[in-house]
Amino acid sequence: MRRWIFWEFARASWQYDVIVAVLLAFIFFTPRELFRDQPRGTSVVMVPASDGAYVFYIDPHELAQVSDERRRAEAVRMIERKYKEKWDVVRLETLYDAENEVKGFLAYAKH
Image (cartoon, rainbow, N blue to C red):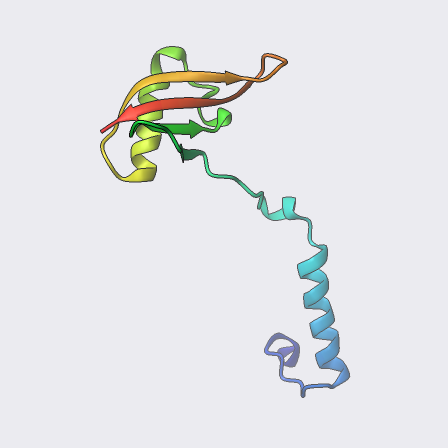
């Protein structure tokens, strides 16, 4: 057992090949959900704007559960955490799709 744990087999031996095959099978066939490893996009992104304005797109999942009264303060906290600067959100707009579902938020901010 010690030889298997510390991988003390010569290269190109059948034992070495078995260990490599087991490791590759584990890497390629283990479902992602087992480790709760799901890809996540960036939740706050600065969007290009004209006239030197600062506009941030905020992922809808980040602010969907926040009440309307706290939404602006939470947006400020998220932007400041990501960009490490002091910001003031002047206006916060909700983006909807054709089915009237929330697709994100636009935060208009200034320094």
